[in-house]
Image 1 (cartoon, rainbow, N blue to C red):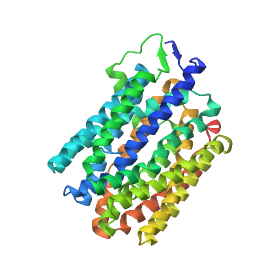
Image 2: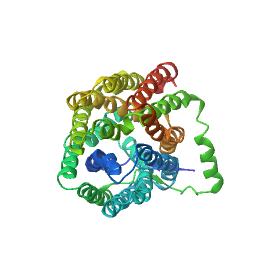
Image 3: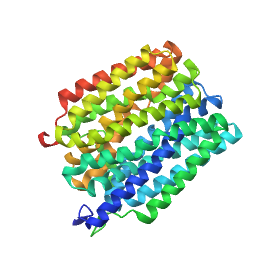
Image 4: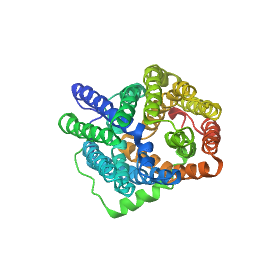
Length: 407
């Protein structure tokens, strides 16, 4: 089977792809940050309880079982049919999801959120393809910086978008925010359709067979031996996050009656911290190694969770968002570059999807469990669970995960 990859496209096309993906992440960041800031208060406003909110997060939404299930399929298909089609499909799913949310809010019926969260979960089909296009458009020595640039493009809109979303929701309605999000998704779809270049071209197309697909499903639960420590550490990380930080806006709405505008300001502060620090982190990740930055990210998460346990006022939580913004800034470039440099090019999207699926399949109940912990123990229950999980992840990273050149 011969392949020619657009890991070797003309230099101008490489540079254009990075520019396009940067703008895509910028627009996606506006939509995600604006809608995410008001999402949990919006769900609660329709009459949902905290466990029900957790269940919706677990099913689909921004990181549940649906996105988990589609990740390996998206990666497997992307390695066989190219990257661009699945980026386009994801934007179409996103537009449909936000349209469903608008309908649910208009009719005041939370049950209509179910098809929306399923569609939103399906947008994860693009994640392995986007990571692969990024990796294939730069040299191996520049990948940490390239992924850092993608992180900056996503985080920068978060400086204003959540506050704008919270303001629009408080001044007008949640529907104004959701409608604006749908328009941004449509604009992103047009950008990708007309300007992104395919980076993986097969001289002979690989057939899609049932035995190969079944083998893929089997591989999800059997990570390669050399990657099992990494799989374990990042799975504990996402489970811990899902129980606490993943439902924090809902927790603050319930426990301290924070408004959508206050939650939006908090998200803006964390995004500003993320965007500013991301550039400096990107320069150091390729030089200092990936594992130290992954462990540092978890340590910052532990410190932030301790702050959440102590804080009682909006100004205190606002200050903690500066620290919280450093968590993704240190995690994302190290995480994506580690995968890109340890996995062969022809398997890169599939492995990215498989890691996401493994993490998600084992951690998808976390938001629901967090909601139950709130019902039993109050605000501190989910936060303690988050703190303990992050501490365990630090131990696993330092003990079992090596740099790509040592694997």
